[in-house]
Image (cartoon, rainbow, N blue to C red; front, top):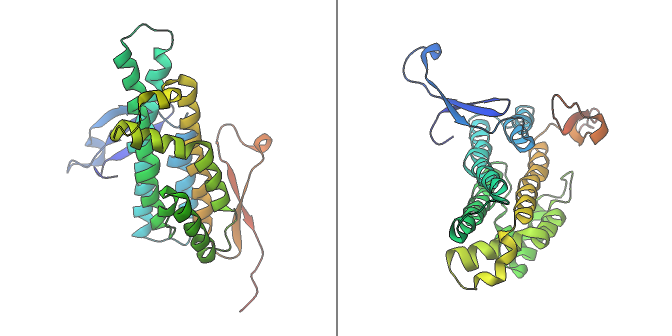
Length: 257
């Protein structure tokens, strides 16, 4: 994390502490946020992803840099977006000025896009995957897909097919809302009326974090030894007390070259 503080996730809360030069027992602990590992997206980014990194052949200092980059997505992107989403939820049915209501959705959209567009690619670069093409026009996107597939032919998921569908489903729309209206006013607000809807906000948040949650394990798995991989645990077999989506699988001893 940029501020070098230690974040502690406990149930529905997050606490923050930092080295003050004294013994750890004397470090001041602050209540950082009312969002914790009880939320699925928090558990994924602060728990399972870091465990997968520890099982990989990524070593320090890159390992620590990668963990910090993933936690930055969570702490500076997804968690602030979720706080805005909670305010949107609370606003439903409440009387408030139009300006204030609009601001809830605009702040939410800005920080959510920051998590995906700015923070997510910084982490994937540390894993060896440049996703810059994901945010370019259609022609450059398709060129990027061709190059990506040529460079990474053995991933356990067709990443580009998945990302192409996300561009269609929600990414391009959110990008236009942020770029064409919120930042540059190239188009009128009436073109983006759906982004001021609580149901749409819920869909956007869910789609954004789950898209990242789909690709990070794939990229991390590419750094496993040839004899090991991961597979998704069927939903009905998951431990509700330890919300893990993946389990390790042994592929056998690879043939000698």
